[in-house]
Amino acid sequence: MSTTILYRPVGQKELDLIEESGWKKFPPRLPDQPIFYPVMNEEYAIQISVEWNVPAYGAGFVTKFSVDSEYLKKFEIQNVGGEIHNELWVPAEELEEFNDNIVGLIEVTKSYFKEK
Image (cartoon, rainbow, N blue to C red):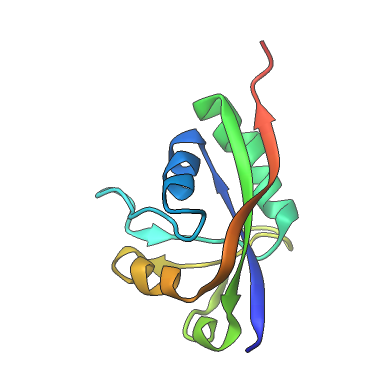
């Protein structure tokens, strides 16, 4: 099976829920979050963590995980800005199926915290 590495910037609450899953799945989206959007490269995930998550939540974490490449073909890559700003838009109602196609564990590659 071929896999694709994806990244997901998360805050502390989401990270705690990922840990509760045994590092195997992302938690369901909140009612006002219709899309789950993993990103295609670590640089973009770092940017979101540093520029959005740390100021908003005091901490930001970059997660890395692999997904079955064949399964991912159903999602079109969305560019939402510059050259590195590529992500997938997974409808919230499909997140459980997405989680079922994660191969291996979700790992934290970077951690950022608000300076005191």
